[in-house]
Amino acid sequence: MANRDNAGASATPAERKMPPMVDVMVIGAGFAGLYAHYKFREIKFTTFGFEAAPEIGGTWFWNRYPGARCDVESLDYTYSFSPELLDEWRWSERFATQPEILRYANHVADRFELRREIAFDTRVTSATYDEAANQWTIETNRGDTVRCRYLVTAVGCLSLPKPPEIAGIEDYQGRWVQTAAWPREPVDYAGKRVAVIGTGSSGVQSIPLLAEQAVQLTVFQRTPNYSVPAHNGAVDPEYEAQVRADYAEHCRQRLRTKGGVPPRINTGLPAMEVTEEERRAKFEEAWKFGTFTLQSVFRDITSNPEANAAVAAFVHGKIRGVVKNPAIAEKLIPKGYPFGTKRLCLDTGYYATFNRDNVELVDIRATPIERITRTGIKTNEREYPVDLIVFATGFDAMTGPLLALNIRGVGGKSLNDAWKDGPFSYLGLTIAGFPNLFTINGPSSPSVLANMLPAIEHHVDWIVDCISHMESNGFDRVEADEDAQNAWANEVAEIAAETLYPQSNSWYIGANVPGKPRVFMAYIGGFDRYIDRCDEIVGNNYAGFSFSVSGANGAGGLTDGFEAMQEQQ
Ligand code: N01
Image 1 (spheres, protein in one colour):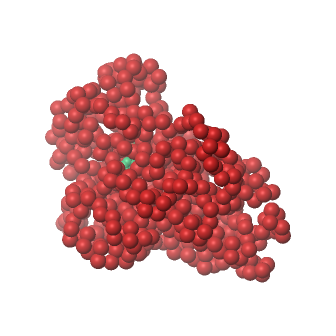
Image 2 (tube, rainbow, N blue to C red):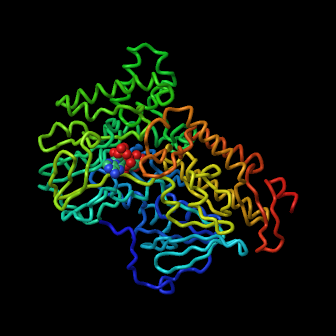
Image 3 (cartoon, rainbow, N blue to C red):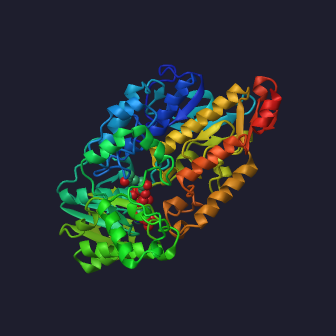
């Protein structure tokens, strides 16, 4: 397994030339962390960053399993902040592979010299707010201590893999790996008996490729997922020319969409307002086009049970059409939860893989896994001897990576306590009781429901604007108001309740992690509407935020909103 801990790293903090104090500490060096360094440097702030991996890339460093690729089209999975960068980078495939995306991240880091203020192989073990000094103290597993005025988390939403939760793993004599921490050196599965546990996006992407080389592949499925064909291939030159004709404008349009991607097929209509024939024709068109269009081709697919049932029936028919053995097809057909309310998967040949002679599907709801043995996996029906177990069992999503930082705010209150009933955050950007802490793509922002690149850019720009605004008005401390935070939590929950999403046991709602509070963790009102809400709040004198001059800088005192800031000047 790739080492996610690196506790054995040797150099001392002095040898590693840690600055004792910086303006901004950025935790994480994926796309969010890279852009944060770039942006803060632009306003002449000193930054430093810690990254647990040995290299940049975040998600795209760790998830290097066979078949890993993005489910957003490459031309949209790009930064927009630099016209030169947009011009010079060329994607080879419609949906880029993990290695190509990692090359892009490295290209960006090289081009803008973003590596120099990042310490790699270093995991943050605590982040503590010191009220008297109005500073954060960050400690790491390598004994570093760095202080900063502002703390920015860029830790990703899907970056803390769930540990293998199945009894007996310690007895297993074969090899096991996780898709979310796939080793850097090649994993040999050719000619081996391989088991995959989990059929979310990571399982769905890796299963067809594992099946091509394994002598036997056994897939242990707990919940069948909806998967739609990616129809991957080379980037369509015509479409690329169209986008590149005004790439900047294309990127601006992303901000005016629900998911951060300009929709390609979108009727804008409620599904049941057209005839059955028209509906079916649109579903076919969306299916042929690929991506997540099937989810957005009509505007009420994830809010109207009837519309949802129509698209679900359409996909069930597709699965029956591909999978030759009707009993296997029935096992693969998702039932009991609405289409699209667990994250849709995008596949290349997933369902057809179950037509292969060397692939077996085990429904572990019908025959649960009892334990892992020395030689394989034992269900209540029989034992499956395997040489390699692939855990594609997902993540402690969204809150997990933040809680793992061991964050303590005002009065030593831990984030784990503050979030024991679920994540409370204002705009997904700030948390009451945790001054000068900013969370890029934090819970209760669109985050995982939007194209990550524009979502990251929006958040980083917002944070930099907020801090610039404070600094130019003589303030050095900002904090979300508890009331505003509660009102935002209600708004997020109310919008989610208008949809079918809360009906499924998804990671969006924390249902995949035993004991996790059941709270819908993303803002589902649309990226465009979210941006409008952020603008409205800023335009309304940063309503819901308190800015102050901390005791550390002399005057002290707390004021509410921008008007008050101006009064104080
Ligand atoms: O994880 P998942 P993932 N015993 O949580 C099963 C993004 N992503 O890594 O549904 C047995 O979706 C679990 O079953 P159930 C994307 O946002 C994107 O695949 O909980 N089974 C499920 O089948 C995605 O949604 C891409 O009943 C267990 C599976 O394991 C997110 O990451 C590619 C189990 C986990 O599925 C997570 O995807 C990859 C247990 N104890 C990932 N625990 C792109 O395409 C869990 N399962 C860009």
